Image (cartoon, rainbow, N blue to C red; front, side, top):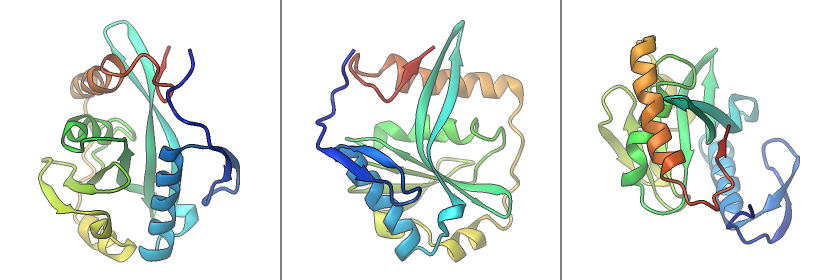
Length: 183
């Protein structure tokens, strides 16, 4: 099945130097990459992009994308979920993803559509900041996460969180959405 993105050609990934398909969504992700490195002080080696998260619900499995994870001193401190459209509908599945990616609670969750952003407390989902400019800079993130517990997510809770991601991002996906993969 063909995707629903307008293909504009190719572009070079800012973080990896790899050639990627140029779409409007990819251009926004590239802008976020540049913001993280050039304005927020993260090293390219601290940012993993185009990450995949395997989720399960019942007997079904799927892969959903995570735009970026920020890992400093061997701990993932921030996850950034990108998706076009409304941010509020992306809060809950992004919080759930923050509890699954490393099987501990990632302390800071960013939900963005590339134009706006909400920065959430991973543990309780509270809105900390709004706007792309308020994504924490490297030193601020270290300060914000210094006392984080990185609490291990037990199997029962992980199963529930996985079901939440599945419901929002897999079952709720457009049939032509090629960013998710049903296994």
